[in-house]
Image: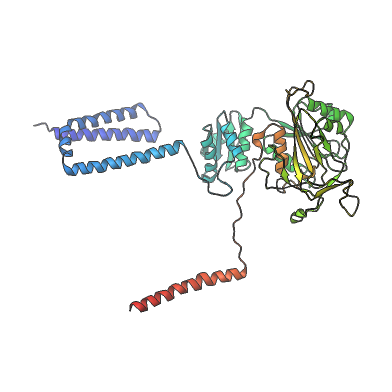
Length: 514
C-alpha cells in the first residue's frame, strides 16, 4: 500500500490544531497554565508547523495563483486589522480612561480622593456581600483601582461562602467591607465620601482624637438638639477621628492624646489655671480651635494676644438684606469673601452664615511676628459693628462702630523652627479663632458651607489636609416645569399642529402628482 504524504500531512495538521485548541481551552477554564496544558500547546504547535513544512511546495504553488494572492492580501489585511484592534484594546486596558460629561463630574473622583488613593502604600480589599451585582458601585470602586492597583474589589455571595462573611462580621445582605491588614470597616453608605473615608480609616496607623472642652456652658457634642454639636461630631467620627469631652480642671492639663483642642462657645469664663494649660499646650506645638460668641468673656485674652488675635467686644450686623432669601435677619452676617487658606479652598462663590457673631481679626498687621496669619472670613461692605443688641433700633454710629468688610475668623500657624517661637517648642502649633459658635450647631451646620468650614478647620488643625473638602456631589436639577398654559400650547403644537402640517403637505403633493 503506497504511503500518501498529502493525506498524512492533513492528519498531522489537524491533530496539531486539535491539541493546541485543547490546551488553550484547559488554560482558559482553569485560569492556570498546568504542565498538561503547556504540553498540549507545545506539541500541537510543533505538529502544525511540521505539517506546514512538509507542505511547502504545495503551498508555494498555491500562492502562485492570482486568486490565492488576492485571498492572501485580504487575509493579511484582516489579520492586521485584528492586531491593531487588539493592540488598541490592550493599551486601553493598561491605561484606563473614562470621560465624564456631567457638569458636576458626578462619575469622576475628586482631586482629594485621587490624592488619597494614589498615596496608598498597602493593599486594600473592598468586598461587597450580595447575591446580585451593583454595577454603579463597582464602577466607582474601579475608579479607585485605576488610580492605584493596591485597591481590589470583590463580590461575594454570603450564602455560598458563609465562612468569609463570618470572617468580616457581616450580618446582612449588601454589606460592604473595606479591609486592609487587620483593620476592617463596614461602609455606612456607598458614596465616594464613604469609600474615601473608609480608605483612610483602615490604612491609618493611629486614630487622632478631637477634644472638646466642657464645664463652661460649651456646645454639647452628644446633643442632637438645635444648639448641640451632635451633627459635626458624628461627621468627625465618620472621617476617622475619635471625639471626646474633656474637663481641664479635673484633668489637670490638656490630655496628651488630644490632636486638636476645641473650645466651642463657652458661656462662662475659664479659670486662670485653664488658660495657662491652653497656653502651655499651644506653646508645645498644640492645635486649637476657639469659637467665641458675642457678649461673653472667656478670659483667654492673654492667649489671643500672644497669637496677635483681636477678639471684638461687639456684634456684627449685616445690612445687605441677602439673608432674607434664607429666612435670616441682619444679625446673621453672610460671608462670601474668604482668605487664602487650605481651610477655605474652593469656597469662592459659596456662602457661610454666622448667627450672632463678633469680630475676630489680626490685632496688628504691621507687627513682625513668627506667625503665618490669615483672616479667613470677611463680611460684606454693608456690614457694621454695634456694641450689643439691647436697643430696638440698631443703627451705625461712625464714632464708635466699625464698617465692613469685617473679619470674623483668623487662622495662625507658628513653625517650630522659627526664631522667636515659644521656648521648648518641638512641633508646629496652629490656632483658629472664629467669633461665633452657632454656625456649626445642628440648626445651622447644614446651611450652605457651614459644616464644611468647621470640618475643614479641624482637618487643617489635625494636619489632615487631604481630608479637606471631601464632600458628596449632587446632580443639578434640570427638570422643566411647565404651567398649564404652556402644557396646553405644547399639546396643540406636538399633537395637532405639526401632524396636521405633515398630513396637509402629503395630500397636496399627492393631488399635484395626479
